[in-house]
Amino acid sequence: MPVWEWVLIAVIILLIVALVAVMVQLAIRRKKTERLRATFGPEYQRAVSETGAKRTAEDELVARQEKREKLDIVPLSAQARDRYADRWQAVQIAFVDRPASAVRDADELVTAVMRERGYPIDDFDQRAADISVDHPDVVENYRAAHRIHLSQREREIGTEEQRQAFVHYRALFDKLLAAGGQPETHRGTDSSKEAHA
Image (cartoon, rainbow, N blue to C red):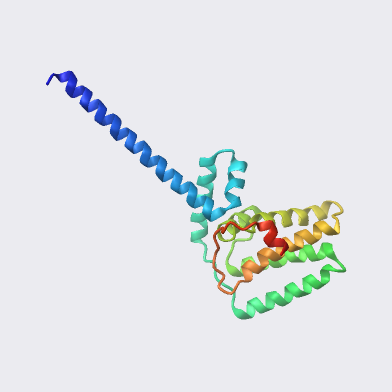
């Protein structure tokens, strides 16, 4: 067999190996994408839209998961759950007469529960990122509620917006108070319907 045939066979083998390697990489990336979409639900698309690139968004979501794994998030004791549930009831009753302060109190109460559970609370964006790992179905509602809370400091907010913020805070509050306190993965629920239920 002439040398050029051996060279041709070697080149063909290298091309086949390279093609198989590319196909394996694509399959791994596709599985990673599917896993992140299933885990984060609508938060996945939000991250892609925010970063402008799928790979960048996926790297950020993986980094969130890795950071969250290092946190020592604990469930609340039965006494703490009862105490927070009682405080929520008081805030909810106050909403009728003082919706603006009730929204502020709801924000503070959610933050207090997060602190007791072990979430870092210094920075809102980081809190939302941490919550997105455990409760991706309500994190966008949490962001919306917080935006309304901050907006009411600067301008008059209508009662309907305040009610909506309160409902959003309640959705996260309920998840944080859950008996097991375990993270959830996205289950294909519509978070806006869930928050209004």
